[in-house]
Amino acid sequence: MDFAAFDSASAPPGDLDDVPLHTLKILVAGGFGVGKTTLVGAVSEVRPLRTEETLTDVSTGVDDLSGVESKSTTTVAMDFGRLTFAGGVRLYLFGTPGQERFWFMWDQIAYGAVGAVVLVDTRRLTSSFASIDFFEQRRIPFVVAANRFEGARRYTTEEIRDALDIEPTVPVMLCDVRTREVARDVLIALVEHALNRIPA
Image (tube, rainbow, N blue to C red; front, side, top):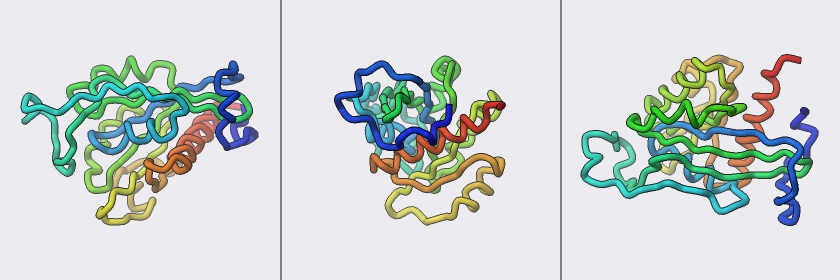
């Protein structure tokens, strides 16, 4: 399947319930508070499934809130969304929980995925190391998307690549996942990267 041959625009609303020609499972991963829920919600053509719960005193000393002290909720299972492209390609999006205490779920969520978006916050790059290690060890194609947070220092994609010590073949991009078009382009880049990894 040549993904580039399909129209990059989302399918018209009337076509969303048609049976797609191709369905792909995509993971949206990264550390706590990097924007996974935001990305899924920005692009999903259906109301996204969210499993967010309010942070309580019980999480004190368990969840690392460094850099995201104002965050009041957390994903405890997964986020789920759907995006269909004109031409019959449908993506099913699964956002993984970011806290270490929920990592035991990742293998089950990752089963059958063609690739993953690893979202990073340049103010807290260490929070994304575990996600990168997970996909590298399982040989699951992934792209790195640096979510631009207001007030954060700006880095080039090469500086981010060097800091994360990832292979030169792994796409790295800068983005604001609150914007639907930008988040969609990140997903397109991932699918194209994953398809290029498939032997001819």
